[in-house]
Length: 384
Image 1 (cartoon, rainbow, N blue to C red):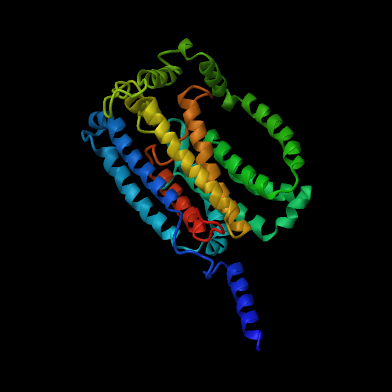
Image 2: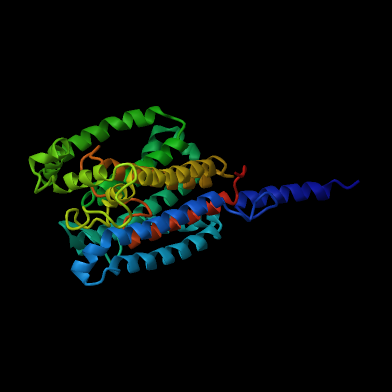
């Protein structure tokens, strides 16, 4: 009996799996729980953006549907991008990761010089936020270089080498947007933590990071952060100034009660909370839908994070595992920071709530990331 044929078939199957091509073990179906959760979050966001923005839009643009129509278009575009990435073999992203990382850093430099300044910060260039691209870029790039040469992480020198690629965009972003810089740093550290066999590297690195952070806040250009800390401790010391947004946000959260005032019935969005459709939108969710609505929304995020972790754990290779882990970390840390700011658990900082806050750049790029996550789920070793 000729055993050469079956053996060659097995070897071919193994080679195909290593190169990321579909085999008989791959499935054509993505994780539908993740897909439906994302769709629900996007639809929920569109509804809440209209509810929270129509008064502001009517007074500033004479069109109550101004933000609703723009976000709806971005949602459709983002959904299209997600569907494309969901059917694009994630292994092919390896060849684009270095290019995307380089382009992202170029835009981060350009925005410092020619970016559009809004409220004292330059965060927009050519109609989008480069810092949002940086989140996706750091996930792709770190997953690629670590998956290619994971053994390098066994040495402290190699660990520092990889960490340097995280620090570059973090420094560029921190010049104008500290909160987003923290998110990018957290994403990079999370990917390194998952891949690195040496936990003590992170303990050693925490010392200079805390020292550097302490020195940074003492610089004159960061002096305003001390004011934010004072307001965080007691927003009523300046109720019509720096503490105004925090107080109004807490009023919105508290007045919602268990079941809320009803969709569209928020009082705080009527000029009390400025631009309620942006980062502060979770307070309107609490006011209009109450504790029940807030828990329902956070439950959707928890389902997405939980299923994303399962995709990472069951990914067929290290590259897929690190990609999925990075996407989950981004969602988790942004939700955590946003909700913490709304409830005054941490000092005020700008952080959009994924899928819910108004913004084309944020929504589109996070939908692209979710498309990648869904594609990885198609090659999961264990389904469900």
